[in-house]
Length: 313
Image (cartoon, rainbow, N blue to C red; front, side, top):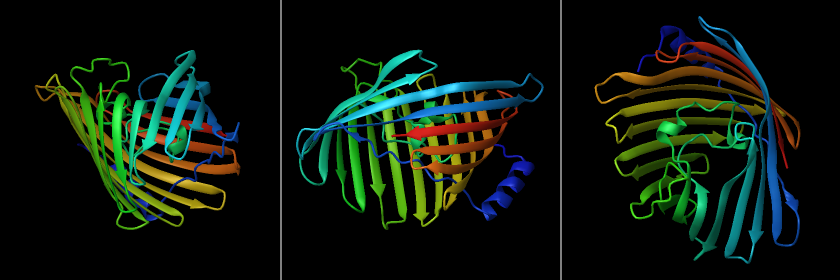
């Protein structure tokens, strides 16, 4: 994958001052002894300057989500997540699943739930900047329907999910299920390493990431590969650094990916440097600012400025 000299120089300078953002935390509302509600409101303004094209701007409500968590007892729990997005124009069921703790280390989950894979989370409350890389649909799992088992200790975790498809919650074919596997190692409180393999028929992806978090600093690296049913293939990676101080923080991320068809032609690609300061206004309000420089042979080059207000509860 190509990386311009300008980007290499910019990345080296920025990493020397390393990087990123404190995240908003949600305490939730105790509706009853067993029922808790939590969620967030995500709003933004985005301006994009496209090289050789017209500039674009957009603003509004990106997403509203409310999650209900019910504890039947110490072992059996349920969660239902409802979301509204402007893109949908309606309320959507995001997740609905039960978990049962067979032992202190082993739990089973059943229903509709999000994939374990990927360094960057699906929700804005788990991101260190405003935007995702954009390559998640090629490499990460998505919301899934099926059963998952998780074994977890302080230093090791393993999971196996048998689902209709690791990539689509709309897939209802259980005669030919897909699966997702995970291995995780936590040799210390500061270091986490995870590996994932997902398969659905002739589509398969692998995701690997490692993170170091100590005090105010978080560093992460991720690598992805994919082989798809139409004989296309792809790879992508990211490097990220985060530095948080008092009520403020700053994140730097570099990512790159490329997708080739069966003949070796590039059908989608992109790389970008993202710089994202943030400021915690209160316990429930986080402001995130972002400047992103994109380069792509297939989609063109662009520069983007974003301002996000993220309210959690």
